Length: 352
Image (tube, rainbow, N blue to C red; front, top):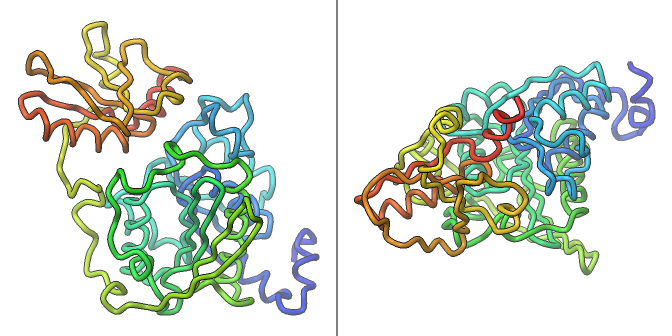
C-alpha cells in the first residue's frame, strides 16, 4: 500500500480494506466549480482509483472567490485542463477520465454507466434531475450538494434502494422560482464546506464506513454555524424512472434555434443584434461590444422593428436558451437564436 494513505488506513473502522475499496472505485464528478473542486481534491488525495471530470466552462474572475483551486493565471482557460493538471500533480496514481462536455440527455446514460458513484456538483435544476433519473435507471447512487447564499444542503440519493431526489423534490421548479448562484450569490467559503461534506459521503458510500445520508437531508446555516437534519422516505411514485425525458428544460421542450460559438464568431459584425441575458455584474465584467444587456430576471425586450435573426447569449448557454424560448413565444415573427456554449466557449476561441 502507498505510504501516503497510512494515516487513514490505520483507522480501526477503515483499515487496508477500506483503502482497497477506494482504489478500485470509479467516481464521476459533474461540475468543476465551488462544490466539485473540494470533492475532487479530497477524493484524489485519499486514493479513489478513477475520477471522471465533467465540465466545459472556462475560468473567470468571479470564480476565484470560491473556486480556490484556480488562480489569476488560469483566467480564460478550460476548467477541465486546469483541474486535470493540478490533480495529476497531487496524485499521479489516479486514473482520470476527462469529459469535455456538459451532461445532457444524449450522453447521460453512456457516461454515468462507467462509474460506481456520481457526485452532483452542478448549480442548475435540469442537470440535477437528469443526474437523478439517469442514476435511477442505471441503479447508481449519487451524492447531492446545493448552495443558497449562506446555506447549503447535502444528501445521498438512490443508495441501496433508498429515496431518490424526486422523492424529496418531485417536480422541477421553473427557471424563475429558485435562482442559481449566478443570480443569487454565495458566500465564498460555503461551497468548500458543502463540497467537503459531499466528499465524506462519497467515501462512506464507496467503503461502507459509517452512516450514509440516505433518507436524510443535511442543512447547513453558515450565519448561525448550525447543522440540522430532515428525514424523508422513499416514495414509490417517484422512485422509478421508465426512461429519460425528452427534455430537462424548464420550458417543457420548447425548442429554439441555436448556433455554435464558432459559427457565431464568423458572422459577428456591427449589424448583429445580440442580447446578453446575464446579470449586470457579469456583463460589466466582460462582454462583446455588440451586445445589449437584457438581464434574465427582467427579460423585457421591445417588439423588434422588423422580423429577422436576433441572437441571445449568456455565460454557458443555459440561460440564453430559456430566454430565447420565452422571447420566441412572445415574438413569433422574429427568430431568436441561442449561442451554444455562451461566453465561456467564445472566450476559449478568442484566447486560442
